[in-house]
Length: 433
Image (tube, rainbow, N blue to C red; front, side, top):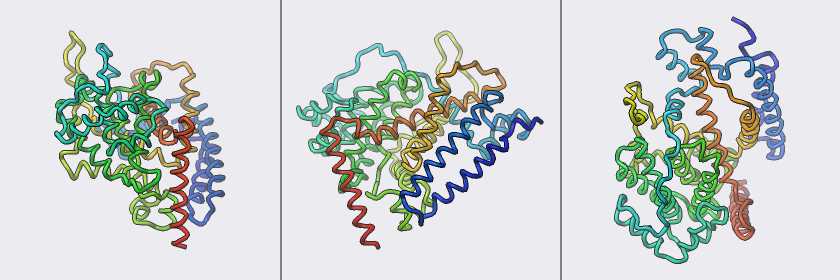
């Protein structure tokens, strides 16, 4: 088989150099300043790797795992090859098929209800009453008029509303009717049950944020939800996502810092905290946020919206066409993969890599696309998933860091809070010696 189909010597050398460099970066004894400089060098090496890879990709299939299929490295029946790809590569064909099966947005034939419209009685009476009370407040409604804009003041809203994260999520869902859209596309059977569980989940997640934290509180989560909604109003994001992507991403924004203790990853790594031990110093807090969110659902059936997603989804047939009788796709696997990846991408230790991946993505988008032949269909399906997830990763990460893009008075309030949290961590570091 042609040797040119595998990584060249230069790429292997760069990969080895970057691996050794990243091993040094992980050592706790190096200073933060040195670590930042080494991360910049690692990002530069990565950019060279990507440049070389890009030239190679123009001459060969774009996913190495597809080479395994074409070259006979993984042989046997199709189902066996797919299992081996799942085990030994990062390819996730089930999630990729889930992404491909999602319809894009349904036509907006009818106007969306206003913030003050009568709420649906799908959640418990207590949760419904809470939202109703807020929507009857002139001050709260005035603040909600800025929903989905960079002018929304989450800190002031949190002073007016006792449960800002729940109320913001519930009011957005009511306005956008995402659950109805997902139901209309056949991706959820019982919209009322799904809505009820999701609202209970949001209420419980809100209670797991520590409002004693100056910065990483329910107000921050609410702010990120609203900023992410601003991104979803862009024509590009609307064009490349589905209603399920939209709903899933708002959930991701809501849970992205749940249970945050008020110290950063470096603090936990250096102090060998229980969290650092559990997650092996790798995206410690982000891993905890995801785990805690799924533990909430596993521990309380009333919160388990995830369990209502179909594991055997078949795209509804178009008018005049027969229903597809083929193998269904697992939307649970797609949603979990996306949520995990999105939240792990908020780790600031991955910022340089995310920026570099975005640069390459933008360059590739500018190039004319070619229709894949039948033999490359799996490859293209996987690439479509990777592009979708990168888009969602980037907008959540950007929403998480969006404070400097807000009006000056809002920026100042958040700046004071994040500094207060940093100083509190410094005091704790001093106490621990």
